[in-house]
Length: 197
Image (cartoon, rainbow, N blue to C red; front, side):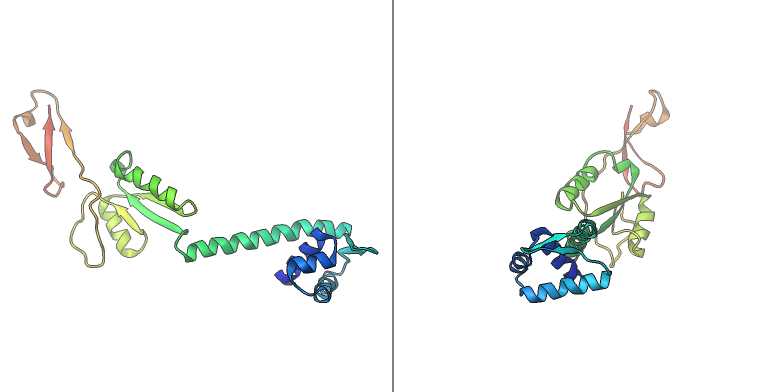
């Protein structure tokens, strides 16, 4: 059984007439009749009751018509989805992010915009530290990552600064750190942290 048989059967079933179905399909009526006969032979039962003028679906034909329509619709939808992927309009995007960057700013805005432009794409978000994301992108486990810093220049990766993060350290009044105007946190890779007292 081929998709052509189902398309022909659906047309005849909906038109209840071989001549109208043939015109709708733009095929010769004898060829259409032969294809329906081949389909009935393959199935082993009649899909239509022949009438003096036209045809009427048999009980089995009525049930088969519902399934044939659904099958053709699923095939069309599958072809549409594949075509969208082929044109780059669908698929899966795997993106890492640091959790402290996920609540406001460029991160949620970026994904809202992505959803507007790519509603059919699957978005897989993975929280991870910056270094983990860096390695995951290099290894192909992530397509992109929102990281806090680029550990080193890498010829295989491109980077784009999308935001500058302002970090503040709150300490109690009279804490020894309040005497300092600026300090660098251990492990902050030289980033300056302003103190708020």
